[in-house]
Every structure is written in structure tokens, then in C-alpha cells.
Amino acid sequence: MPVTTVNHEILAVDGGTPVRKTLLPYGRQSVGEDDIQAVVDVLRSDWLTTGPKVGEFEEAFAAWVGAKHAVSFSSGTAALHGAAFAAGLRPGDEAITTPMTFAATANCVLYQGATPVFADVSADTLNLDPEKAAAKITARTRAILAVDYAGHPADLDAILELADRNGMTVIEDASHALGAEYRNRRVGSIAHMTVFSFHPVKHLATGEGGMVTTNRADYAEALRRFRNHGISSDARQRQAEGQWHYEMVLLGFNYRLTDIACALGLSQLKKLEANLARRREIAARYATAFRDLAGVARPAVRAEVNPAWHLYPVRLNLEKLSADRAQIFRALRGENIGVSVHYIPVHRHPYYRDRFGYRGGEYPIAEDAYERLISLPMFHGMSDQDVEDVIAATRKVVLHFAK
Ligand SMILES: Cc1ncc(COP(=O)(O)O)c(C=O)c1O
Image (cartoon, rainbow, N blue to C red; front, side, top):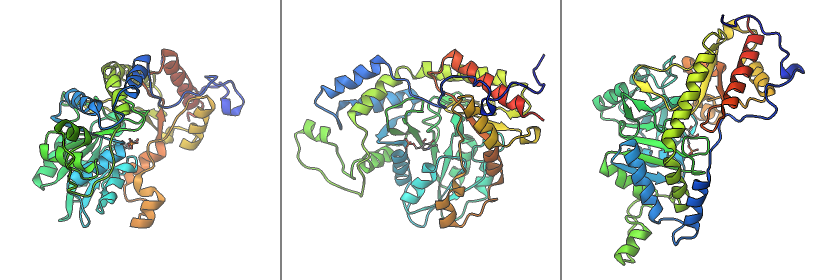
């Protein structure tokens, strides 16, 4: 029989015993001895940066996601900047994106002197709604930046169709979605450019790091130059060719990923398949465990996708609870469950409010979701006991506040 009665256990925030003795974070990297050895080997080699590991990692990564080209960057943010540059964004242009993301997605448009224009999200996935995006197109729109929120691919067919009809570039921010599948294809070669992040809480960790994948050689060339000062060949190539000559052909940055990081990335790539499987297993366990909890809505999964589960964001059915998100958040933290919130909609940050005059209420679906969202711990290194602790604490707190 489903447990839907009010729970009388005393919450840890009210002086009860916490479900766990120690805090479980919402995300954490897994680094094994094989990863450490791969990094040590590079430290003993001739090349700490611009060496052979960079190309090896890029080739292996491109093959894994099924793209023709992969260009590494020093972070996901730098990779987004590179993609915004390669898409040709410049002052006067607009790029349509989602407010339900980390600020870096929109910031990369600003780095290029262009204007991010937000469009609201679909209520089920919290991904950019193609119809809302279509309504924001003007003569200045040059790109659409879709985000695979929590690891659930964006509505890529509809977005690509919209972009193709209007001559625009689609950049997919797949920072959450390495290994996610859309119509049985891994993300990475579906959009014109796809961006990944290798921050420690992601599926593959290099400390800091990022990648842009694309099937277009011209984008790949622009990305390579942009991440290396706008120079047309790198140090290793020059040495191989015995040349001193180089040319700076555009204004670029030093956004290179080191050989140290690439060696770690290569080593982590070997375990990606298994790590994804573990995340999917945890998501399935959560989905079953919360099926009867009226106070909580589980993340939706559309039929055409297989998410990568970077996050497990539940939405509170506040109408069925006698507490708000802040109280439930605090109660879960009290149980030593390291919950988080993804995201404060980008247009609600002071910088965006002050610069663009947002007052709130512009994107009602994203804003309503924000009031309800709580990200439960989700990382491939979670033990079965960790997963059961999250379930026990969530049930304890949500049932305690059930109306
Ligand atoms: C959706 C999204 N885009 C971009 C980024 C930026 O990636 P990085 O931290 O590697 O710069 C993040 C990082 O968390 C992200 O979640």
C-alpha cells in the first residue's frame, strides 16, 4: 500500500535524528587510480600543454559522441564563448536562449557584444520552448542557444527546423548532457555546434574544461584559432614542421585545455558508459520511490530521449504541502542531504535586471518552476546506501509537510 499518510518522525531541523550522519553532496567527481596514473604520466612527459594528449582526447571524444570535430577549451564557459564567436555573433545581433540555465549560457552572447533574448521554457522539461523562441525572432536574430536542462535533450528537431527556416545557427549547451540520446543519437552532432563542460560535478571531469563538437570544418577551424590567440597553427604543429613562423589572423584568447587535463579526460572517457548507466539506474530508483509522493513531481522524460541525468530536479507540488521550498530545502539539508537549486532564472540576476530592465513575470513558466525546484543528489559515485538515504529523507520531509 502506498505510504501517503502524514509522517510523524521528528525532522532533524526540529531536533530529530538526521537520516545521515554526514552530508551527501548533490554532485561529486569520481577519480580512480587509473586517472591519477594518467595525469602522473603526463607530468613526467615533455608536454604539459599543446602536446599530444590534446588531439588524442579531442579525437576520442568526437568519436564517442559521433561528431566529425571536437575542439577542447579551458572550461565550458570558454567553449560557449568560442561557439558564440564561431556562430558569428557580434554587436547588434541577438541570440535566443532559455532563462532556465546557468548564467554562462547567456553570458557568452554578451562576451561577443550581442544581446541574449530569453524565451520561456516548456512546462514539462523546462527546456527552451520552440514556439516561444519563434515568437522572439527579429531581423537581428543570428543564433539559438538551447540547453539540455538536467541532461534531458532540448527539443532539437523543432529548434533546428526553426533555425534553418530563418538562417540561424543552433548552439546546443549540452553541459549537462554528455551521453544523452535524442532519437537514438547521442547529442554532439545534432545541433550545428554542441558545447560540453568537464567541471567536477559533470559526467566527465577534468577539473575545469570544456569541448565544442561540430560536423562543420569551418566552425572547427574558427574554434581552434579562437582558443589559441587567433593563431593559425599551434606549437606542436610548428615543431613538427620545423617552422618558427605563425600568424595571428583574428583576435582570440588563451582558452587552451592542458595535456594534464586532457589525459584525465581520456582516462575518464573510458568509464563514461558505465557512469551513465549508473546515473540512469539512480534516476530509475528515484522515479519508483517517489511515484506515490503527491508533494513532489518527478522530472519528465519525453518519449524521444534518453537523458544523461546530470541533475535530478524535482518540483514541489506546493499546493499539496504546508511548507514552501525554502523550508523543505532546509529540512533536507538538516537530514544531511546536500540538495541544491538549479536555477535562479538568468533574467532574475541583478546584472541582467539592471542591464535589461527585467522586473520579474516575463517568463512565467521558468519563474514558477524556480519556486518549486530542488535538485536531489545525483552522481555516478553514489552508493546504494546514499541513494536510499536520499529517498528516506525526501519521503520523511515531504510526508511531514503533506497537507
Ligand atoms: C548549462 C551550463 N552551461 C555552461 C556551464 C559552464 O561550464 P563551466 O563551469 O565548465 O565553465 C555550466 C556549468 O555548470 C552549465 O551548467
